Image (cartoon, rainbow, N blue to C red; front, side, top):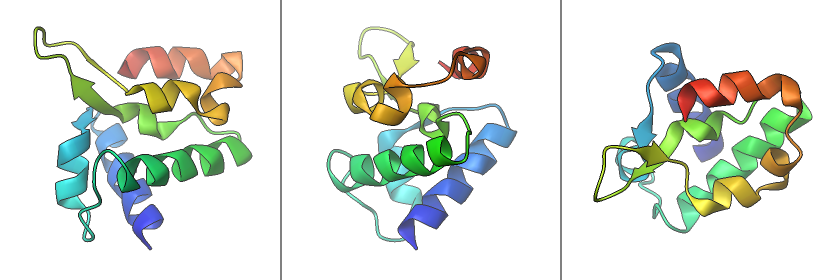
Length: 99
């Protein structure tokens, strides 16, 4: 159920063309998964499902903020996920809008 809750949260964030911090995602989910362990695993699973259906990786909307700037990017695990590494080029413009 946590994966579906996470997906619905990210769809809502995407519909507003926003991004969300890892900690905020954890706070909004019922189980409050650890942002560094359980949440990373859930985001990986969501990426795999998106890839299976030919959708861009919606977890790109979940970001960390650099302490020295206002720039926010997905964590390293996002970039190493096979669903992202093998991302079709047709999804790159979508991804660039959010990161």
